[in-house]
Length: 356
Image (cartoon, rainbow, N blue to C red; front, side, top):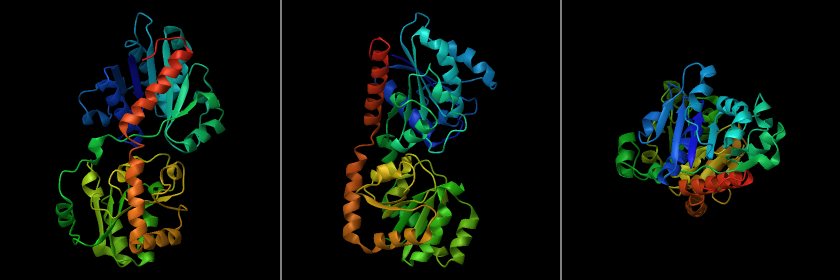
């Protein structure tokens, strides 16, 4: 089957990674796939085996460029768009592409309400894939027909939980004692990621633990921890591609975000059997069920209480960790690819076209 993937994002976002993972999975199954990206996209450096195509800088030239890759014989083809501007473009192109045998699929992986609902009304679009049921409710609220929405959870490839060093080596590198309790998070500097609440909760909890927050290296975070009395136990190693080296030393994982749909980092934490604390926002309650604790977002006291429970209740922590390992099997790349193929086949059959 011929696949045309397109993203309008140039960043290494979780949604862009998921698009790449799906492209990898389909390519390994022998499908012909071309992935269109902005000319300055960071994602292309992560996998040279994918047929990346840099689109023109002017968005008005995108359609003419992409149409060069459509099958000329009218044979079936699946076009799958990722991110807002790509969805918008495909929603218009789909109106004429349907007659050329192109199945058009959009993707929504963020929980906030879209400013422009028109792409979700397009009669040319066969389907919108969302990465959580919570995300599906959002696009239904702006008028996307329920029968055009399919939920496909994120999937993580096995190499995302492959480490390059031992836990002892990583602890030594960070200056963390062998038996010290480690609270871990994979965050960024954006306020929506909630790091400020986690830092305050660490101080409020009073637990004797180290905080490792991967994804930021801004000196003000260290200064804030020092002012709160645990600066010597706070570590901010910056943005790291291979987060597995850090996940392996965590005793629990915290996702303090204010808004999320289906965070990849939480699924990666499952792969290490980590008990989890997460904000009850978006699709997070679909992930943290019997494997940890949910807390209200932007609330320091409940998060501090959850940290105290994690640090003090060894039996519960071990039980939640085992449950995370079991949950990890539900979010593999293989399952994401299989579910995606099921959806593609459903759409092809609906159009009377041969299945994959």
